[in-house]
Length: 212
Image 1 (spheres, rainbow, N blue to C red):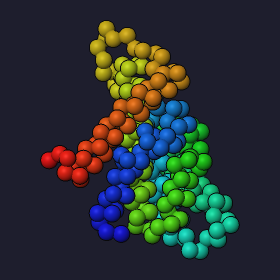
Image 2: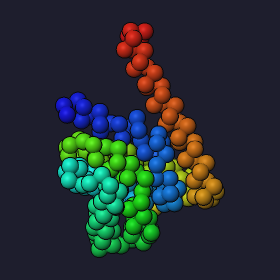
Image 3: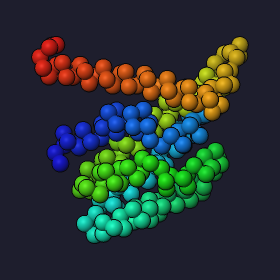
Image 4: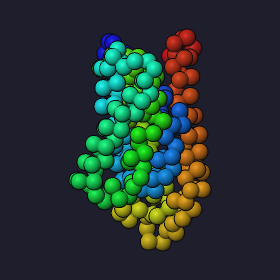
């Protein structure tokens, strides 16, 4: 692939096919741990690690893995890197491991990981697959951190655990409840999709010479 193509692969995960706001993948951890911005970054980067390395290995072995056992092969590869990142977090960031709990091991069955392995890594060379993993992982991290930040600020008045809102602010406790998670996710999906569709429409009009 050319550099321009690689940049498109990267930006695809950030904006056009953002896993949370565009593809609606990985909703379980998105709603489950998005009550604090630190959780969003931690979960997002852990998922990015698994995405990048599982994409790399699956792409490198794509001509060796038999078609009939590709799914079990994906599971083995993904589970290996999930175990690695889980042990790293437990060893060096125990507080984050405690906050994320079962959601780190559950990366093994995260729809984002399987979708990229099946749709991209198993059909493309190693370098584009790595770039795809980085783009999708960072897109997931940004989306998750954005949602978690909004919920933490409105729901607790804090940001990264530090008091942000004035003492007179009354936290909206419903925002950090499961119901509030669905409400805020739906609101952000609406906003992000409106922005992306507007950008795409403008690019289309510019390509047709309708605007300067």
